[in-house]
Amino acid sequence: MAMKVYGLPMSTNVARVLMCLEEVGANYEVVPINFSMGEHKSIEHIARNPFGQVPAFQDGDLVLFESRTISKYVLRKNNSELLKEDNLSDLAKVDMWLEVESHKFDRPMSVIIYQCLIIPNYLDGETDVKVVEENVEMLKKTFDVYEARLSKFKYLAGDFISLADLSHFPTAYYVMETPHASLLEEYPHVKAWNTDILARPTAKKVAEMMKATA
Image 1 (cartoon, helix red, strand yellow):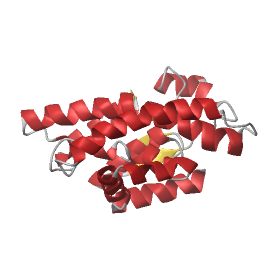
Image 2 (tube, helix red, strand yellow):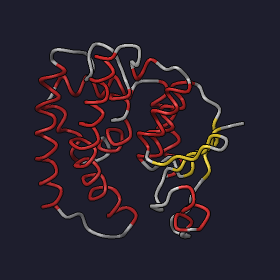
Image 3 (cartoon, helix red, strand yellow):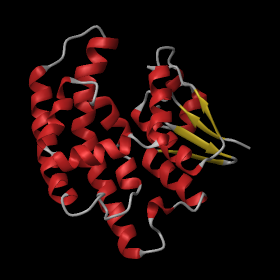
Image 4 (cartoon, one colour):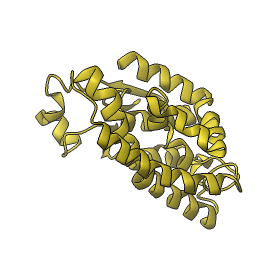
């Protein structure tokens, strides 16, 4: 039976899960959730995700929400090396950088994407330049740390790719469509790392899915 992912690939959180499913070659089905029709607040979806958000995920009788938790489940079920669970030290570093991604990268990136892409293109509104500038400054601080780390290692947790790197893919993909993509020019190691991730066949496939539902 195919695993089910509820949501649209254009969602960064949904795309994160799809990236992991593609990495392990899993059999899965994307079940669209129409926000404009209020399907995310339906009784059926609230039963899957009590916060009325996406993604929700189903594998047989198991139902999960929260994209990073789902991603870990998918990778563990398929014995993926992307978690490095056979080495306690490497696993701890993967977990640490995944936390960094969630709190120091995804948060400012998500605001920048919302302000620069969602508001003008989908909500017929105007970008709040002040809010964007504040979050760009937050992102620069994160990139300062990443640049120092990636000058010593090929990937964040070490010289091996992991979920800590791939989890950056969805927001990194979208920010390249904003006026702030040029920010990466100031951070050559971050730029090379980002290019490496976006060039993965799985990333390209999920990117096409994101475009198709945008």
